[in-house]
Image 1 (cartoon, rainbow, N blue to C red):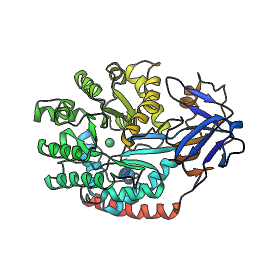
Image 2 (cartoon, protein in one colour; image 1 turned 180 degrees about the horizontal axis):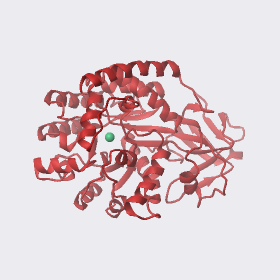
Image 3 (cartoon, rainbow, N blue to C red; image 1 turned 60 degrees about the vertical axis):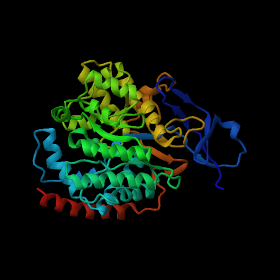
Image 4 (cartoon, protein in one colour; image 1 turned 30 degrees about the horizontal axis):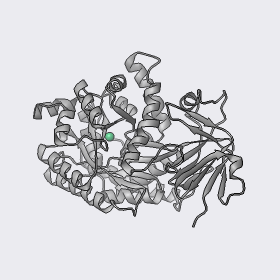
Length: 448
Ligand SMILES: [Zn+2]
């Protein structure tokens, strides 16, 4: 059996917003993928363990990205996109053309480089929302293959929608069901699934009903875009007479293992419904600003006790960047320079761990004994005193550009000293991704 792993000489940081702590002179023992013990370093003298010296580094829980789209990697540098004047045009001219151009091969090759970027940024868990309407069957396995090759933790789903016709909607439901059935065992402990749905405004009653049934039978929660743009509310109300969240509630989509991305255009009653069902909102501030759809009102959601976590919607893989952008966005929205900080650190270090702990059924995202050993070490020499009281300020204002040195997922060291410890040729992988992207871009043009 492998020896336990002992992380020594680091400053261990526990960024839990209600009681942040800085532990100096401590070491952290990892055994069978779990944080077995955190104690003063001298207490570990003489124990049989592999040791990693993390001098001049701080140890933090691995970052969690609660909403992203790995396939959108292939939008980087994509030219020939006619400028959009609305969110609907952003979808029609870019995303719904790009995802239609994906093959199974492209699903795999678009995921792999971005997963490595995540590891390099200290992101240890990704909650992905996948779409490839002309290559649906097997697409989640293609993404899962990339996930398994990198050793990262990921929760996958296929976004069911009627936007590509009834046949694609049925196949999307089947793809979720097949993936959930195949991955429902313990053979891939780092992989989980949700039942994916695109958004209320692209889902007919029939499709929504069938997808919810499939999710229920698999015992899974849902992952869906909710009120990202005003168009979701307008179309849903025109078709059903209900608000987006009311409609989703009636169909049984809400719940404590459901992730509702965005929530930019929500009424008070909708926030109440989300709070009362334990539904978790994934806030994606950079994406919302990029698409000019508005900025979610975190102050109002807080007043309604809605659980708000943080995702990137594929704008970045670095949660530090998203955290900071989210704070600035709230300040601008509320016209208040002292708001946003607490809401965003709460999202990243309270709600994201809660969300993925619910999905995996074990504690994740915390530096505490018994938690999964998903950890990062960052090279950081504080220029001001770093204490329990100042830790969160350091993490927001000082850590942004610090180098991630070590990334550990489920006790496995995926990167150390800034070097990936994976059986992958990064250059070759990137070259193959570029080839696949070239083909996707050709099909993208022909779909216009
Ligand atoms: Zn999204």
